[in-house]
Length: 473
Image (cartoon, rainbow, N blue to C red; front, top):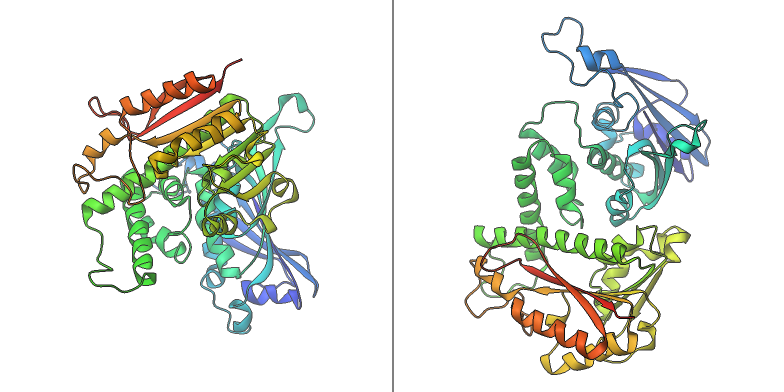
């Protein structure tokens, strides 16, 4: 189990001061389940690399420590001795704890400075889901992952579920260490120790300043605290409260502004966040099932779906389009195209355009995604939207989602005639949506499959309805 951290820049040997580990000698540390070694395979004023190697004793894992009343915590045959997991996070905290806190008495100015840092984590369990980019790219890192083969001597056995992850960015060392501490267990989820309620505070403490704003914060909390779903729920609620508090502080001070969300509003926000994750996953899965290799995200917002599609090997080109320049700027800030690897940047196109006007740039894509957009268009402009997408762009597949108005009865804070968002011009019932999809199919030569997204209710259906339109012929 190996982690390396490389600092490139003037006086790079000062990495030893920042980590509080002498670069001129190898050091050994005793841990509960084995040993850790810190050494410097590269040492110069231009580039210095520190390595932490963990040597986990598999017999101790299976039998328990000698003299202990408790048995082991893993089977005899397991991947714990070599996979990056909570063992590595524990070692980071134990060995680099002072650096994680941002303290360096001999070089305090360097500890507060953003540095050119690269970390490599070997044998992360990824399973091909694009998790590395989802977790680290929103934090500003360039992310590179290489799939490991099961056995180089037997290539026919194929790839393993493990990757070698490289992340590079201009960050403070303390930030890098805290990011690694929190996110490494998110890949693996199988912790080597009993999870108690103190883990919630540990997550919030090491995630302070970045986790509340992370677009995958729910996934991170759920996977970090996977052994206790109730703890994960508490952590997510705390993150949402922190995010709401920050937004209130940044907002203009008006009469009655800045009040805390009621428990009902917080629960509604939590459900909305969870629903958004389900929605994005459902749309991505529909795109992949269609066989599309090029996709245009119409009304891309801040680019969450675009980011997910960029992670997919099947997708060779993704265009993100929105009418709002400021929203596109937020999407660009989130996607960070200037710091992307070249292959990923070459996939992406950002464009400003209205969905109610014919635009030649919309043409030529296998699939168009219109996620929670149509309800923001004035009803009188819907025919123009229909022609722009289904007649002129006319992709093979159109995937469209919109709220199901019937489900609003489950939101306690909404009145009988209220819509879910102040900018919604309308919301369709399931019957309304079905009628509209039939009109599209008859007018523009498509077939449609309708499904629901989110918790289903016998009376009101699902909170989101999705139509997957396929061009006939």
